[in-house]
Image (cartoon, rainbow, N blue to C red):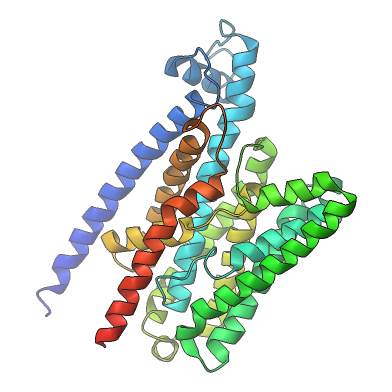
Length: 360
């Protein structure tokens, strides 16, 4: 046993390094393609795209984009670039939230969209929109999304962990909570339909997920949520690794489990709330990406977190690209597309988990 242990670490480190390098290449390529291609065709080359972006981010005089029509420059810089960046950040945030939840609950099926956390964040955003607070300041939508996600997490934690049912009740609690929060969302929409049809339409669109209205304001909202969430996940990586063996075992090794759970809940709520605030309800990314990365790298959170964030980023960029080009010039809501892609895998994972449990 002592001879076998050292051989696993270099192998996992090699896989991690290779996966990060491939991920960076895929992220850069997907960003470039997503900025170049849209729901409407524009007569620009990839070189034109690089020239426009370089002109905006580099010091004056380094790159000249004056030969490109102003309309094309506006499409690239004001519409497609922030949309691609928001897609990357939302994908990374949802993947990180899934990493935290699956580690915290020790359940590979735990994900923001499965156990009601995304729905809680969406309900919070809907309250901000319906009350008119979202029009007063940009801070209210992400704030209410964060509070909604945190409330959903607290309910799940109390019922599934302290209600006597243990981890086996997690999915049942999530399904029940999804129904409850969905009913609250339907109530808000039905009330808004009688007085503010435009508000009801905005909330309904929100529930289907999408980043078609992304701007640099959404980038400014999502960026700090992602950075803080990633930093928190890496900070908690060792404690989450130890908690995979159970709270009692982690406590015996010096882990302050209560503090770890509280910080993990706050980080997950921030990540989910930020993702929903700028992208609406986008399901299955937080389930599929962490699970697939874990199969390659193992359960260690210090490697799992950055690799899952990077994978979630390029995955959602490509999903959004597909959503806006498959029936061009019409667009499919991103949440609908990710559900179509992710639901079959979720059913497969659920079947596998039940099959493994039957043999125990």
